[in-house]
Length: 111
Length: 113
Image (cartoon, rainbow over all chains, first blue to last red; front, side):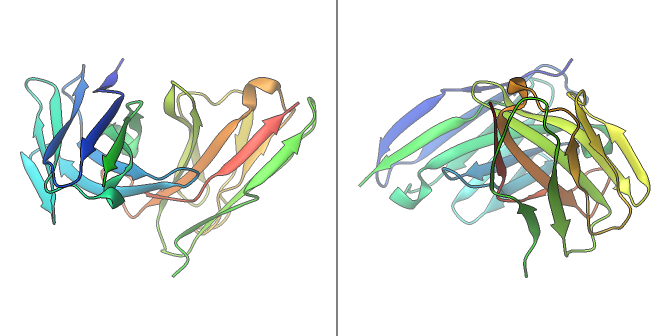
């Protein structure tokens, strides 16, 4: 059974710092890996989707990588801003688009 | 562009009551799904649908029922509410039933007393 782990559970950084969020998974037979952002009391917003055949995806200040052989993905956020404060969730996509989620990393960017 | 719309946003039920959480999407997505989010558990898949008339169970289907009569709507029914069903429920849709970006609604917060 796929298990997805995100470490750390919480992270606080000063504004402007580059940071890396980690996601690990136990079963490498995934269709894709997705990173989401969740603001308090809100739904999830898709940030990046990496198909299983890809190694990384970039969008603005965000870069996500995927290493299926080691069961790891990272989300790199460059030049962090207070508006980046949120919970970041990774999810492994299986057959018929079923997602297995990690429990998230709560990020606080201090001005 | 509404995206995925969920109603109600908040609901309080008594044990044994039934209710339906509504989900509608205006993106002509074939794939729709329901997740529940609980503290420390992450999001877990309840039911999903790959098209009108087709539904299947996810990881935690017990106590819930779904139907998909149209492409746009995917209601989630709680048959006899239990305190264990207190949670935040999210509906999501995707253009692809195989491997595509999921678009989520704002969530429905349910409390069962």
